[in-house]
Image 1: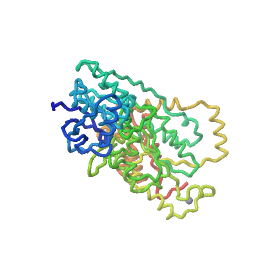
Image 2 (image 1 turned 60 degrees about the horizontal axis):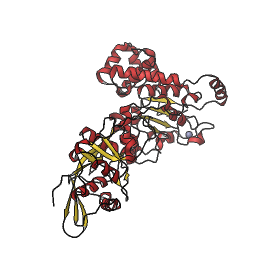
Image 3 (image 1 turned 90 degrees about the horizontal axis):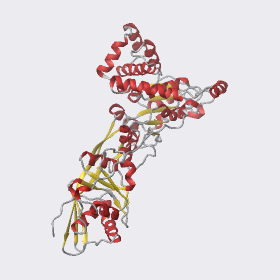
Image 4 (image 1 turned 120 degrees about the vertical axis):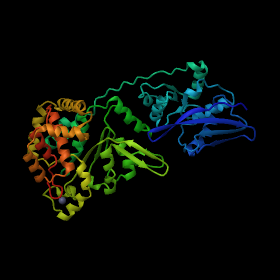
Length: 508
Ligand SMILES: [Zn+2]
């Protein structure tokens, strides 16, 4: 038996993709196929798919004992992406084809029984890794749209095994030049509902500030006041994702086989309050991103916040602080990027709808118990706190009339948000939500607010150090919305207003 070099492939694990080499040896003896190298279920089933695909495309399946080795042997292999490289390794070892430029090419794809190539999960992770390693990646045509986000990638797509072999065989070894892809992603954000929401000026200005500075926000108000509608309309204010961000988001979705219809759209996730901790931050047998990662560069909306399990809410603290969700299990340790904006909503008391009509009838201890399900440390990390009162019907009718005759404010607001964001990126390289250290100190120093004014504010509002810095960040965003270079007293006062809910006593 002649020795032939391996066929290379990739396996996505979390957001990394490892290079795998696939060797095939055909030994004399009873016919059979063995796959070694820590192969799990789906990989073992690969031998049946490969056998059918080869036979149905006019190739011979070797008569001897076929041994497939997946290296490195200490890495668990799962998924269906090895079908194609295994098929090629068998064809190569049995002398039926000679794959050109083998050492600089990686193959990935699931095979159907008739040789058609099917999409695999995590193709973006693989495409990025192959590109980084200066390799050409051959992938299923079904994955083309997703992989095309890697703009400088050396990618070759194939619809099925036979087309691929024809293509490879028809060229000289060094002449395999894949087509380049240019993905045009331009996108308007969702429907403009923000401009159509009547009243709730305080909540709306909170959302505007949250959008402009990347701040987290919580709304407190009775059922039916429009909290959910306000939260959903929030993305209308945000600019579409840039190329880098949409690539990051698509990589996360791709790792679990989810495709987003519009890559530039800002992600909006609103998990139900029954969600488990693992589903929220990620986990599972194979590392899977949770809701916080699926909301990366977008919005995580948690409605009825106190109904979530306190333990699940506590898991949010780390990703809010660090922008990453780290999952450590016995078999792996991965980190998913999780820079999301948290928009939360809650009722003032546990009875919800039944307390709405003629005031709250819940006892203080019931209200206290309900609110304490949301921990102080979590509330502390949410920058903006806004009340959303129920609107008087008469006032509502009046406002509705006014709103109908006035023009949609959304285009102008979007522009203000965009301008404010750019000003922040220009000045400090990040949005105000991340403003800290010397950059934040510089802003505080240049604001020139009187010592006495600040001392009074700290005392009256019982500000913790964390809250104090948050208020400066919010004030900076308010100044940015006004296109001002320094923070003024009125910005600081307005910012204080967004932290003024007394969570222990207030009700609406
Ligand atoms: Zn009540």
